[in-house]
Length: 307
Image (cartoon, rainbow, N blue to C red; front, top):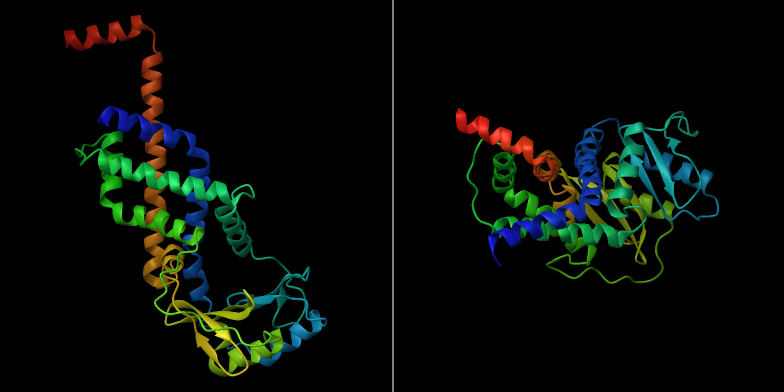
């Protein structure tokens, strides 16, 4: 395929998926800072497991909640799968104000994973992003110039590993590819009740480092920050065992090291946003140039020739 044909394909795929890609990239930028926000709150006062268990029993006496999430920064917790609002751990009452940042993360995650409620649209747009990037690679090395096109090509090539790894890991998550080096432990017996799971986790981990505890796939799992990494653990009546690392998810979400991966994901999102916006501007300028009256183009050519 000739380079003009590759460029045309590159351009048309971008135009078709421009809006969903913009939404995915912007929400990805918002989610990029979430690990930093989460780790900034885990260094505060310890959270007592007994207090958490007491509040779970008070607000979920029938045991209908499928799990809980803890926000150490705001000292609050949320029961998942219930209509109970966020609970203030200090007062034991409903949190007086909803965290704007938490709400922004919640909205961004839902939109990022289910754009307009359609997970397939996110997957299709992510696949389109990979194709667009590969077409750019096939078209060859750029000539770096201080022009809109030069900045577009330079941004792509200098950040290529980051901008290519992000959608590729997203596709791995969408298709269930984990690249785990060891099989997950087999689930034996019924999952623990939420209060019992909280006690088991608290016996070996600081509750202020816990992000969530809940039932997934028939097992009780906990997500806990350990050395800056958000690890997944299987919780049962005998122990709290680390699960094999899901590397695509760790890399995509920036949870393998909050202090390093989170800034890298911010850079990746900014680079992708720059590529999308400059690509659309380049296309718009060309379309406007073609639509100018012939007399104006001839006048401009005459002025340039006279100069």
